[in-house]
Image (cartoon, rainbow, N blue to C red; front, side, top):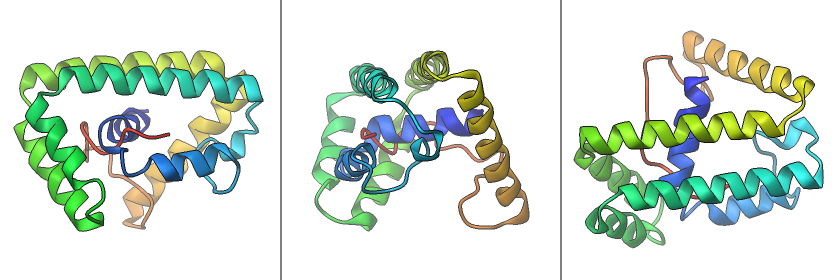
Length: 156
């Protein structure tokens, strides 16, 4: 479940460049984490609202300088976004990190509350599969101790 929070954090802060992709997912033009859960229109709207609120909260935690670095890297390609991500991640204080983790936890709980029991189980299985890939060293998995606790996205 830490992976979910980590991914959500990444999306919440640096997703400025990923917003277009997130919109495609919402429109059903691309596959995303929630695409296979067969969310209802109401669930999609509620999750979108939860994520939007989380992005606003995380942006409020970051300094103007940190946000500027992210924004400036937006249209400069993947390498520039990665470099900005790395730089901002290195500049995050312990207090910021704690606040962002609390936001992630609350966001995860809110999203879980929107899902049915079956959808929650399905999501849990998806996380387990991803962790299994990480243990095997395959792409698409994230090692349990590997964190991108902040920032990588503001979309989705």
